[in-house]
Length: 537
Image (cartoon, rainbow, N blue to C red; front, side, top):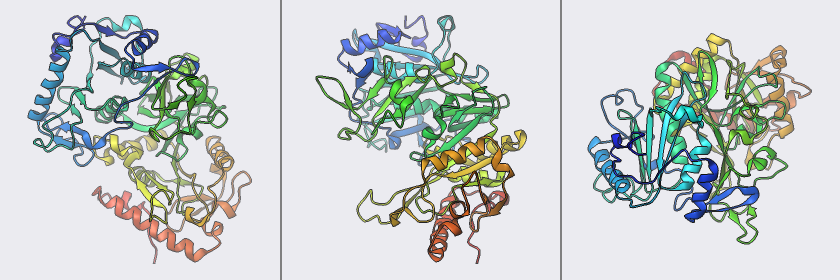
């Protein structure tokens, strides 16, 4: 089988027992047979991911080679690695596979990208059955006839049991490595079992190839109305409400995390979802809770050994407990309705931020230039109190709302966003799901979810466009004076704050943080710079 499907072309000349695109029942059988995991609630499989319960961004490298080195955004996200080091570690990975005795080699062939015009043929090779389960869930599963003559566009070889003993000599961070060779269209993983490295690895690859074709790759969720019309995309970092607000009983889900926007419309990259389950509550997140059934894969959850009932509130293994499941586990999804996860051009773009400073209004409209600025900034703020000595909110910036996965300079993605907003006349809104009228340290409560949902609905039905707006004093964005019964005492920051002097002091502090962050990108386009926040003397 190995030679038949071309594994010999990448050096895997002596692999036995190649199991390709097993059905989920076959994968589960192997997980249990090899004691990699246990059967849990409703038939879901439960596994532990070993030492790493999350991604290892400091161990990710890209080979410095001639086909890509002039295009990449080199720096702390994309760290250069000499090709000779890749060659050495690649030989170790190949040797590991070729001398793995009679153990199984799992191969998944499938797609990243629901649009056939832009999808990437991906091949995942692993030694652990649960890793095969993970990629089976997360990528688009091909029809049986599509496997005939399948040629991968990009291959990831997962050798999680292989460690880089020469990491100090090579100037690398640890024995763990995740290395991409874009010229050879191959990546190798060693020293970490965590499945998310494969998912986000392919996302990084899509972030490289698609923009060069004029397709915007996006770290966002997307949904449509019940007629499959009026698509909306939601950007936001963790904790801003991206999953909660895009999961709407009135609007089927296209996807929850990764999408592309071409001249034909938007499309999901994935065939599944990878949701956090810490503190999972069936009342608050029923779709995720009910997706945990046969075919789902739970990671690092604590459970009762006798009953196998998971305790989603238990953080003793990690805060990053997760579940992966195929999209058809979400009944209210396009994929669950038997359709490809695609739609036309979005009618609305929503940037979500949880502003713990309480400065940004609950909702505002952005010009295309302001959208570029805020897209590149990718702002949210964490609440104080998570660490000793931190007494005020902590600003967090992640370019394009997905900084760890960008391979090109953030400006490239922002230019594509602006180009498509203008070409297809798509408005962009900034929605603050955090604090209004005071910062989080004051003891004030976060804006209520019902008010935010009301705002989102008025954006999506277009009624916000008929409201009179005023300009924000510091950010220059347009704020509606009223909206569906929500008045100026909530919508306008100067009215929401009781202590107006404190508001001005806090706003100036936040503006300075935006400006310092933006300076690192060395963007000299005056239209974008003028669209940023200012302190008017």
